[in-house]
Structure formats: structure tokens, C-alpha cells
Image (cartoon, rainbow, N blue to C red; front, side):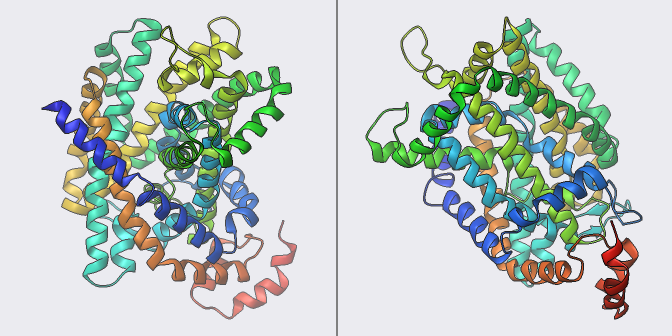
Length: 488
């Protein structure tokens, strides 16, 4: 019975994430938004990094957490097992060329992530607790008039709540428990108890507590992992040009380790590169817009720029580090005792073990997976909470936080074949209403983005000046002519 359910869900997942539905829709939407926004992810990346990492907040702006905390909360949800196991799966099945398609997904996905965050702030509301509430469950209904928008918003909220217990909870806890048991002989129930208690301690404080934890935790875990990867790449620096050549060649020829005729392998490289890239950075899924809506920002454009850097950090930096380590060490060609390619779940660990002395590589991957997975639990808890609030109201928030924490224990101590398959389906389905909404609302995003950047090209306006601009104050032009050029 369980096997039949898992087989059915896997078949549905293959359709949802296949080459004829979600993949072209995600890529097409990202490319369309890139064109409409004038390549904003390329020409404004530096501004987004400056606002998010250095300025960190717009003083006196409305919001519950800083722009930096909103960024790290979204990063917490996306920098997870997809950056370790997902990259290995893509390369293991699609060959090194799959990494190129992950890059493509990340680059066009930055425009989708910008648009989601823009709309999240643009249509956010204030709930009964005085907190900002936004995301697809809000902007699809408020931005698209009539029953169509309401249906899209409700569908997103339902799929997001279901997905949060799977891909954002049980599967993450299961990965942590399995790796700690394998590496350090920690019983799965012990891991379950500890993760449950720590998650509950953080989640009861809501988004402000999550923001404080992720702001301190996420940068450390990313730097920790990237430094280890850079050590391996520097030790194998002579192999990097050949590795890059292999990646670019395989992206278009399909000469992958998976075998098969060239056409089928090329399709596999594109399909698994795009699917796993989206699984990693979540661009187009709408989830990160929920965190963006809580940010202390004076204008949707500013938070949109900050949020799109999340995809850059996740895919262009962290995914690239993992992928290059796997390719330069040749881990995607390693075989087990039977002569078959090693399992993708082991590939990154083998790559780091091969590239670092002693047992360091194995430990680093295990600890990295623990940190990445736990951070994902925190980020997705907030996504699920806001989506459930849309469906049943504020009264469900506290019970949800407790239940979500308890479910972590279930994930740590249970086999999850069906849950993995179910999570993949829900993850894909929550992206569909959001992508439709992004296409419908793309004109509004492009029009208001151009207007703001035309009036504040240096992104130096104060909160008061932005307020004057949004109210149509003619004094804005005088400010631009006198004060703006002298701002640092």
C-alpha cells in the first residue's frame, strides 16, 4: 500500500517537475521578468548587496525585522539539503553540465525573486498582533481583482501549509538524524528531542526571534561551508579550468556520467539542473516573499533588490562551491563495491573527504548538513504559519508553532519515502499559482520599479523622502536636484 502511494506520488512529481510544466514555466517566467525589468539582477546586484549586507535596514521604516534579518530568514529556508544533496543528485544523474543549468536557473530566478519580494512588501498588511503579513497568499488576492486572485491565493496557502511539514520539516529533521547517527552514533530519538526543543524555543518568539537567530546563525554556517570548499578548490586549483570546461561542454553535448544516448542525457542535464536549482533557491515559488514582507523597508523596490541577492548567494555561491568540489575531485565518477555510481546522498561527503585531510571532509559535510537543515526548519515554520493564518486566522498561530516543532521529532525517527515524494509534489504545486500571479502582475512590478529607480537611482533617499515620493510630493524633484547628488 505504502509502495503504491509512493509510486503514485513519484509519478505525479515527475509530471509537475517534468520538462512540460513547471520547468519551462519557471524558466520562462524568470526570463520574461528579466526582460521586463531591464536585467535588474545584473545592473542592480551591487545595490542589493549593499542594502542587505551593509545598510541592513531603512531607519524608521515599518516592519518587524531588518532587511538583513529578512534576507537571512529567507536564506535559512533555502540554503539546506538542496545545496549538498540536491547538487550531487543533479550532477549524478545529469552529469557536470547540470551545474550550468543550475546557474541559469539562479540567474533568471533572481528576477522572479525580486518580483516576489516587491509584491510581498507592496501588498503587505498588518495583522491583529500588529505584525506585517505578506506573500503570495496576500498579493495574489489583493493584486489580482475578482475570484481568480482569491483562488490563486487560497491555493498557494493550502499547498504551502502542506509543503512546510514535508520539505521544510520532516525531511530536514530526517536528514539531520540520519547523518548524526551515521557519523557520530547519535540515536535518532536523541536528535529528535534536541531539535524539537530548540526549534520550539525559537519559534515561540515568532518572526522577531527567528530573525535574530538566523541573522547570527546563517552567515556563520555559509562562511564555514564555503571556506572548506575554497580550501579544496585551492588545493586543486590546476583542475578548475578543466572542470569548468567539462561543465560547459556537458551542458550542451550531454556527455554525462549517467550514460545513454546524447539527446537523452542532454535532456537529463537540463531537467535535473533546473529542477534541483529551483529546489535549492526557491525562486518563483513565492516563499521568500513571506519573509520579505516582514522587513523594515521604505519601499518595495529596496526590499526586492535585497531579496534577489538571496538567490545569488544560494546558487551562484554555495551551489557553485559544492558543484565545483564534486567535479574537481571527480566524485561524480566514484563507484561502490558493485561498480555502480555511488549514491547522490554520499557524493558530496565523498568529495569533501577526498579533498580534505583525515576525517575533516566527512565531519564538515555532516555538520554543514545539520546547520543547513535546521535553518531550513526555522524559515519554513514562518512560511507555514503565515499561510495557515491566511486560511483560518491568527488564532491558529501558537498551536501551529507547537505542532510544527513536535513534527520535527516524527521526521527524525521515521522513514520518509512517501513524505519525500509528497513534499516534491506540494513544493511544485505551490509554485504554480505564484508564477501565474507574477505574470499577471509583471506590468505593475515593472512600472513601479522604473518609476522609483528613475527618481532615486542611487538608492540614497531617506524614509521621509521616499514617503514624499510615494505621495507624489513635487518637492521630491527639488530634493533630487539639491541633496541627492551630495549623498554618500
